[in-house]
Amino acid sequence: MLSCVENKIYIHIYPDGSTYFKFESTGDSTDVFNNDFIHPQNLKGWNANIEVIEKNDEKNWRMTTEGISMDSILIFQDGKNTTLNYSFKRYKHETWFSSEFGAEIRFQGKQIKDEFPKLYESLISDNPDSLFWLPEAMTILMRKGLNEISPDSISPQQSKRNQRFVNHLRNSFAKIQTLDDMEKFKKDRELFLTDLLKPFRVEPSFPSRLAKAMKKHEAILESTMDLNDDFFQWKILMPGKPVKTNAMEIVGDTLIWKFGLDSLLSESFVLKAESVFYP
Image 1 (tube, rainbow, N blue to C red):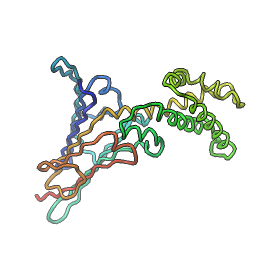
Image 2 (image 1 turned 90 degrees about the horizontal axis):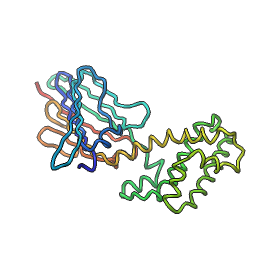
Image 3 (image 1 turned 90 degrees about the vertical axis):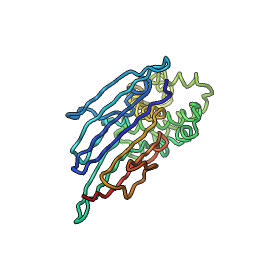
Image 4 (image 1 turned 60 degrees about the vertical axis):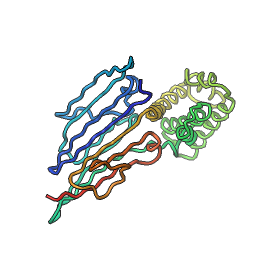
């Protein structure tokens, strides 16, 4: 069985302005259908297919989506930032002697490097030790949750109060020595926060609201970590001859990019291609 999901995307841009797309994801059912990377949905005239592939007593799933679009811009996102958001843009410029084409695939960066530095270090070094990065991550999630539920979080007074909460949580995590201790926090977060915030004067509903707000941001973080099992291969065939690109490989006229989560942890990641077509 595949230990990850292989996402293969093929794009063919035609001189008439139409674009053919084919998305193919192969892996075990848990990873293929966890929605960390979604295929285009609800596009008129597009076809989607799911099949089971059995080989050497191993079972994998393959999801395929393909179709043609006349749109010059397509945006693929779920609106909740719990999946990998990306967009496609193509353009065409006519000259006296040729047609110039351009294409751009832009992935929204996950900002892990800046927001969760220890998790970033863990991911790029392939160090899965939760005790190394999880305390920092939960502390940051608490700060995000506090800023969301406190309407006056930007005021100096509220900001100072929030920082006291965060510091108190950080000190509590510093005492955690085992994963079992960490699981107690994850299992019943509302109870943990209720006990944690007893030294402070907070309204009874505050721990519940904070736990809910943290869960929302944690879902975004978990979806990013799910991408650690994904491998991407994008192929683009442009009209005419490629003249400018940041492709990692060129085979004939086909431009190829291969990458994983490490390319998506910071700012936006962009695939670019330009070509010239002589009629």
